[in-house]
Length: 115
Ligand code: 5GP
Ligand code: ZN
Image 1: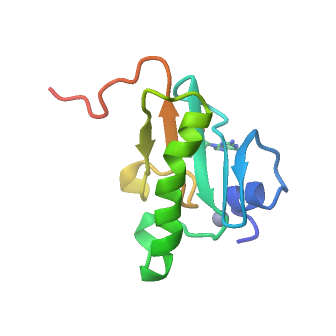
Image 2: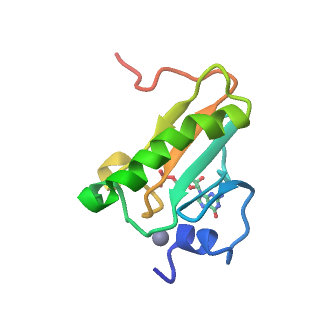
Image 3: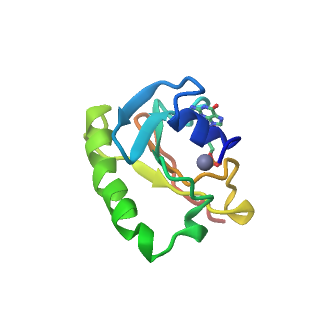
């Protein structure tokens, strides 16, 4: 996807504060962090959202979930962290390239406010 923001970041065409990179994924700090530590884990493969995931993507997505806590620990989140995947307009997604937010440090409020 030539004009997808996260494809451009993954290709190194737009700068980012990189946390991690390998052949399949890249992780970088969110430009507008919601907490003291807030980075995104992104597959290099363009997938618009989790709603586009197919059986072919099972091992890639599994790798990302196993990698997330390792990267979180490296970023100082030994006590835990929140993972968020916004999916589609109804899920509040703004950048239509699948990404896992990894958020932590400071005070993490309840995920959903009730009442
Ligand atoms: P979404 O709402 O799609 O789940 O999250 C998109 C995230 O991308 C937002 O948290 C936003 O701050 C972040 N973001 C948007 N543009 C850029 C950018 O150019 N660089 C970085 N590092 N993050 C971005
Ligand atoms: Zn993309």
